[in-house]
Picture 1 (cartoon, rainbow, N blue to C red):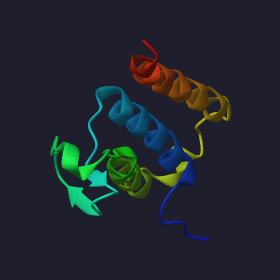
Picture 2 (picture 1 turned 180 degrees about the vertical axis):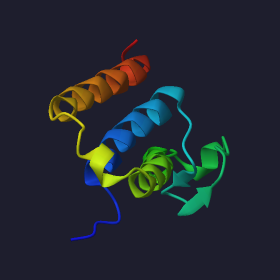
Picture 3 (picture 1 turned 30 degrees about the vertical axis):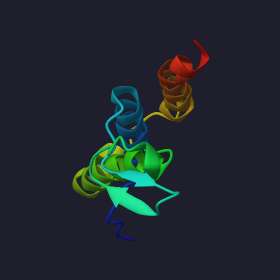
Amino acid sequence: MLRFCNARVFSVVFVIAYAAAVHLDHPLFWYFPLANRWSLHNLADSTLGPVMAWYGWIALAVIPASILAALVPNSIGDRIPAAIYWILPFVALYIGYLHEQVWFH
């Protein structure tokens, strides 16, 4: 059976790209739910209400994960050890924790 994308590669690259986007606070776009408005940059306007970067972080992580999952041969992607799937989420959680510490100081 021919597979076009390797889920292992996608998972690993997605976690790494998502953690980097969160740590660097660099979403692909911003969403202002009270105004129902999308923007490519933070508008810093208090009348628009709070800004959400989560959708932009997800979208930014999907792009490299999809590209590499399509380009990396299955024979290489299948060699990724299972331990990586247990370690990377904890690393991503720690990076998220470091990012969110600003709310508690």
